[in-house]
Image 1 (cartoon, helix red, strand yellow):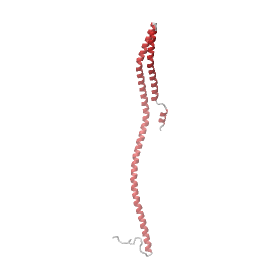
Image 2 (image 1 turned 120 degrees about the vertical axis):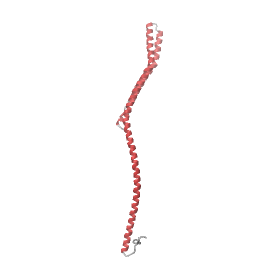
Image 3 (image 1 turned 180 degrees about the vertical axis):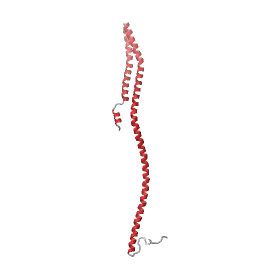
Image 4 (image 1 turned 45 degrees about the vertical axis):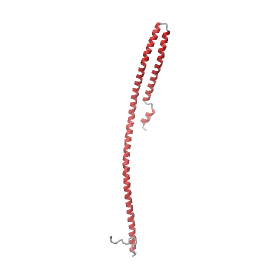
Length: 179
């Protein structure tokens, strides 16, 4: 495993960091969406109980501001999510580019190994053919060798017989003309 891969596995990828940031931002906005409804109700209740007209106007203005914020929150949430996803996508593309270098190297190694296997297969097939031919040749030469050794031994034996004045015992017709 390359050092780059080991280092890659030992740190938190940027995509994971951006996920955490998005999750936190989304949770904060979702919490605000839940709480803002209560704040609006609190303003309405306070305004209905308030006797001071200026304070009622203040509370209703606050209620109006909260209502506008409540209307805007879904769009803020979508924008936050979209920006985070764009950032996450960019980080993932960056990571993918780094992995692509290793992937290309692994792909080249795979192709080389595949070619080696094909070459080794051809060599093995040729070696099998060579082995068969060598085995046949070996068998032929072995038979020829032993035939010659036997013939030489017989000739030597017959020569000894002739020297002693005895008839040839191994191939008595050795000097006859072939028919």
